[in-house]
Amino acid sequence: MKEFIAHQAYSMRRSVLLQTTAARSGHPTSALSAADIVATLFFYAMRFKLNDSAYRNNDRFILSKGHASPILYAVYKELGLISEDELLTYRQFNSVLEGHPTPRFRYTEAATGSLGQGLSIGVGMAINARMDALNYKTYVLMGDSETAEGSVWEAAEIAGFKKLDNLIAIVDVNRLGQANETMDAYHLERYAGKFAAFGWHVLKVDGHNIQELMYAYDKAREHEGSPIVILAKTIKGYGIARVENKQGYHGKPFKQDELPGCLLELQERFEPKPYQSTYVWHAHEPAPVKETEPKPFDVTSSHYELGESVATRKAYGQALVALGHSCKDVVALDGEVKNSTYAQLFEDAFPQRFVEAFIAEQNMIGMAVGLQKRGKIPFASTFASFVTRAYDQLRMAAIGEAALRVVGSHAGVSIGQDGPSQMGLEDISMMRTLLGSAILYPSDAVSTWQLVYQMAEYNQGISYLRTTRMDLPVIYPADTEFYIGGCKVLTSSAQDQAVIIAAGVTLHEALAAQKRLLNDGIYVAVIDLYSIQPFDVQTVRAVADKAGKRIITVEDHYLAGGLGETVSMALQGAGYHISCLAVSKMPRSGLPYELLAYEGIDATAIVTAVKQRV
Image (cartoon, rainbow, N blue to C red; front, side):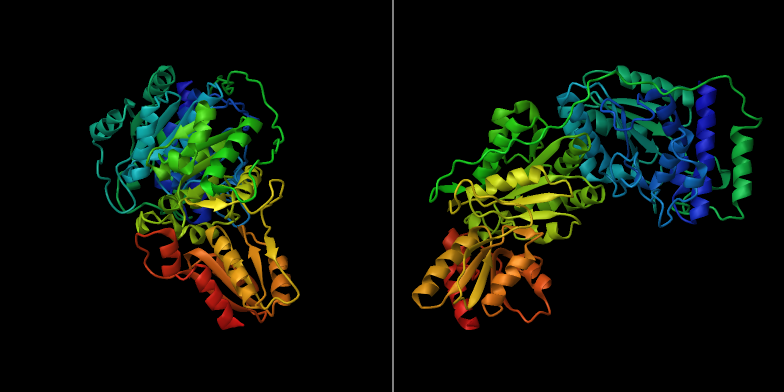
């Protein structure tokens, strides 16, 4: 067994050089240091169905140090799941073997490459196993450099707090980062002290000693009561003497004329005589579990009454509970503001399916990715202003095609006296940049309820629900239907001279303005653009065309990247006259109506803007 694994590691090192030299790019030295770690993991420690990567009780492997992707592709080549010809397409335009792993390579658990995120995803997968009473292990291979990221320690702390003994992290301690020596270099005791402080069981090994690695993996599988970290001391570039443990070779492939000599060096060092073995390897099968079939959602109507005042954040929590009764795969995460986002209602109903993420938004999104990748339907909530902290995790989730559901409450200046640090005013702009994202901004409890169900069924990317702090009157009958990409025309006539487009709290200001304008003999249409991305361009065009192509948008958000810019970009060059009302001054503490007036997004400001336009 030991000799077999050593030969696999040798073959994988060959593959690393072949890939990166053919591509003329990549990170061979970072992959070479991890070859023994990965070979021992896949061919000794892990339990998985070789030809069924989706099997729900398979052990999972996350390559957090995504730049070492050649070692990931190399091991799947040794498993017989990709060919050497495929291997040599590494980094080519039409190849699924990308420079950093993405789901285009079917065996990728999650997109990585922005360092410091793999452990959070692993925590989510470990939590999923606990929720579903599965006994698979989640392994996360990290680089030593990425442990400088704060998100690593957010993940480490919550894993220790939850005693996730089904989570095994391996740190490839090869001492060298891209441009410098790492802070802790080869001082394994420093790494050990940090992880131990967060409640992890620590094992230290020579990362190039197969026997030690086998022993560590056995101990890790047996350990109970806390997560496990294996600190593997390695040599960057291990196998090619002239680059071993030397700075300046990060991200530098060997040249074509160097390749034969490098391959010969590997052979002479790791296979001095032709490998011969009677050992026949078979994948260790995981324990059998019953597969489950997904069930369609049983969509229930809300019971809100017209005119009733309900905050959309509260309607979110109530809808989530109803959705949770409909489907056991729905889970909720919250960033320690659950009594404000109303995610607490879900926790009260389904405590085993609720994850308190505490004030660690980056880790919360990472955990949500891990849960979603293992079949859950996660809703992650916090204040809209704090979602921005996790933008990189959201960006990587989009690259990884993770269908997350994110909810940002307390959006806009309308939250009032808490002041500008608590006012989510950039969230629409941020979410618009994520490919495939849906941005929903309901204006009452009925639309919120319906859109929560729509989010649960949206799997094309990340969906984002923007909720408000203040109570808002219900303006839609309980059985009104809403869908992603739609809008509602609330007032329209043949005499319209302009159209007001709004969402959320400003929709109510728009309706108040419409009544005041009507008293002055000015007819305007009002559109509820509850789906900001994607939005119903055809309906907006049709209504605006009948209203003289005059449009006034109004939003409780900064102008940059918000509702107004969304509409303007979609209608540009077609002769529309668009005025955009948005938050344009630094907000301050105050009452909601004072702040809406101060920013020029209340009914009075809308009336003035319409009169100036018509």
